[in-house]
Amino acid sequence: MSVFDPRLCGLGEGPLWHPTRGKLFWFDIPGKRLLARDGKIARTWQFDSHFSAAGWVDEDTLLLASETALWRFDIPTGDKTRICPLEADNPVTRSNDGRADPWGGFWIGTMGKGAEPKAGAIYRLYRGELRKLVSDVTISNALCFAPDQSCAYYTDTVTQKIIRQPLNAGDGWPMGTPEVFVDLSATRLNPDGAVTDVDGNLWVAIWGAACVICFAPDGSELRRTAVPARQPTCPAFGGPALRDLYLTSASEGLPKDTMNGATFIVRDIAQGRPEPQVIL
Image 1 (cartoon, rainbow, N blue to C red):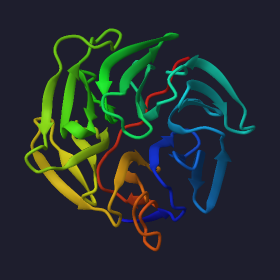
Image 2 (cartoon, rainbow, N blue to C red):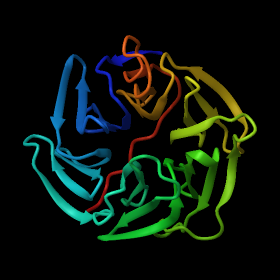
Image 3 (cartoon, rainbow, N blue to C red):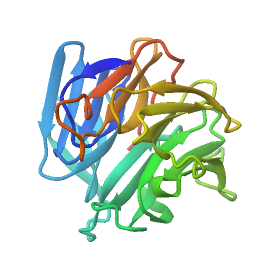
Image 4 (spheres, rainbow, N blue to C red):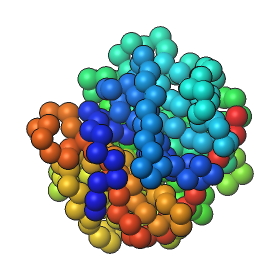
């Protein structure tokens, strides 16, 4: 694993490989900025509030999640237009992990800015409707989807359990009872962001443990990849063949003379899948 971008984030989050631009986007939540890199070309967009997650709408448009709303964002101009509020009346919370689903929807989690217990939730935006799916969440993370569209995954990091939620094949709404997919409480490992590959394996950043763990579709551990940062936060597949794994990290509470907070890359590690296009 090597450094992809040396700009240190207080809390890096939400890496997104834009398939038509061939560029990685990600966020520094406390820095209130969106970052991007394409080869040697790096860009920064500065905001006046916390942003954390994105989906791609078209060549020039992203959907962005902030502490108060979901937004349509124009990449060339930096202009944004509000789509709908997101806990706008709750100053305690902000957005956190989020990802597009295979039906063109967008799942987004919220959490307390100070990780207040059970202050957050998980929502889905689909065909203009923002619906709450999970309540009483402390730290929402690991939102991603099985390649066969059978289920979604998510975690409340403080529980140290990753949940598997069956989905309706027609429209992607949850159906049936959620179940524990992986229980890490015995090892005291804290699951953060996650992404699936073409084989349905789940690649999970482990906060505080300097590694990414790959779990098979049956929940068994396949491999661990060391990270040169103590607090990895979220992985994403990208690169020309979608075989490179990108990884954000956090520097909050750690020494500043390290690579904690940098964004990393592991080349040719597994076959990823294109991020679904958000339909607005």
